[in-house]
Amino acid sequence: MPLVCPICKTPAQELPGTGEVTGFRCVIHNNFKVADAVLRRAEEYTREQWEIALRKAKQRAWEMALYQKRRFLILCKHRRLTLTLQ
Image (cartoon, rainbow, N blue to C red; front, side, top):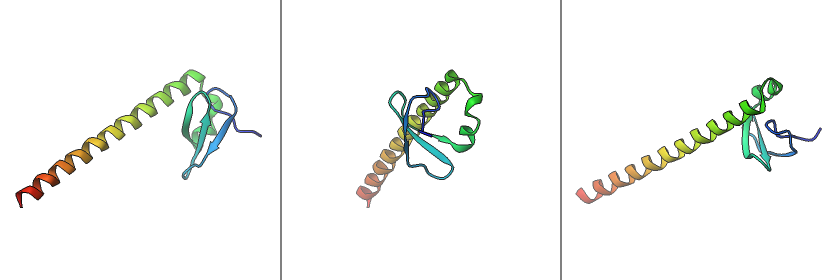
């Protein structure tokens, strides 16, 4: 059975998963991963629910990346100050 995007039901390629997730490469939704437990109940969700969940997940991932970048810059700034004071 060919792999299909759980959101739009178009053909998709499988991406390497980590642990209990399946990765999808969809021409409409790009790359994303879904927990296998959620996939087992995929028919219970509407396309709108899938779209909202994907949008929220991408937003959280973007916010986390931004937070990590800011934290890294603060650490670098702190280390430079520490090095100049010694």
